Image (cartoon, rainbow, N blue to C red; front, side, top):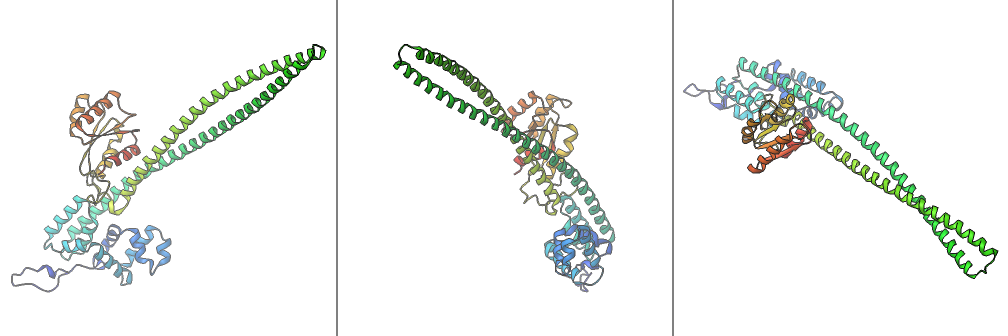
Length: 416
């Protein structure tokens, strides 16, 4: 609304523009203002004092719908909502209040769309006293389409995360089975070692008996008893020979088992490393998904807009160019979207299948960081890229696979 004041020139001073309250705007704007300008956590906190049961147990849709309906009639909820919006977007509101005509407001909205920061400007223009119906309808349409684009992007990432979780559970199951089998083999080895120790103990007893017999023979005369002892010694010597042969056989088996155990331990270490890499890649994808889902770091809907707070975000490429060589061609749109979400530029080269080897040198010269999936690129192309990066002091990031999770994990190494 306009406060009744003017100077002699007929121009309305800035102090005479008084923003509308949220309930003074059109009913059709209540839903997009609440949904765009406030998070669900803020809405739950808003109604917790008077409606604790709904705040703690209500669904996101129920909370949103309750607050929108509360704007239709005088109550404490809408007054507190107005204070929250003024406190949260007061600076933006004061900036937009300086606009004195429809053209300036339209320019400010276009700049907000281009930067991806739409929540505060949407509230400021919706409550501006000189905002015309045409501009309001255009803002409503822009915000409506941004919500569709954001939802589609989130569904793709959530589906990929579900696939990674299933793969992770499968790997954990395989690792558990491998550990169980390794434990059983270790138990078998322990049993073999114990049996060998018992045999050695018996062998020591036989040797002692032999020594005792020899001592007795030295004291005995040449008689029948001596011959009997001689026969007994012969039997003991044969038994000793058999025991030693059995001991050599057991030692050979133990050596084979030791080699197998080393191989199993090496395989277990490889499986553990693969699982750790899968978990690390999953965490990278979860981190990117969480970044997309939070309102403070939500993509503006158009590729290349980057983070809403790119000046503060730690996952910021600051406009650096990422070259991805090889990989799966139909995945390059996803790679590009992920790079542009981190405020970077993206170039793709298929490694020589269709793009040509001569073209590789020119695109490498444009890149700041070069990614290579080692499972989906020729050995020759990979060596050329490594030599180029070493010669030009560029960052080289080898990826374990051409999957999106591996790419997201590698991207963490390139962000500033």
